[in-house]
Image (cartoon, rainbow, N blue to C red):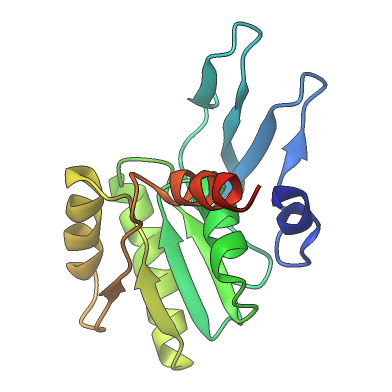
Length: 170
């Protein structure tokens, strides 16, 4: 399950757990830590999905993204873990944008895509199965002359697909 993904070498050190069980996913830019995604379940059972107050969205990266032969760009770090669990392709490195793509993220993504393309890595955009996911794919394609491909989940996002698969086998 997800605990296996969290223990995966690609993801160790790429998140922190709070005392209340929420998970923090650090975003980095050229200057280092820029902010973090916070995900979990609130006391009332509602989903917790926020970005750090005062933080700036950089990119959340798996540890192996700089050397991966397959780079997968997703909308959230949870999507990265879920996609990693569903596909278990150990060549894959992951990048999360945490929602809308800002101009500073475009610069970071352009550099990341250029570096991946220069080492002949395959780059897959695995954004959500909705209009925002399609918009992100179009934006990312506009950042490079490199041919990006898109992988779309069956449900709204990769976490929905993972939850469905887990329920189906239990």
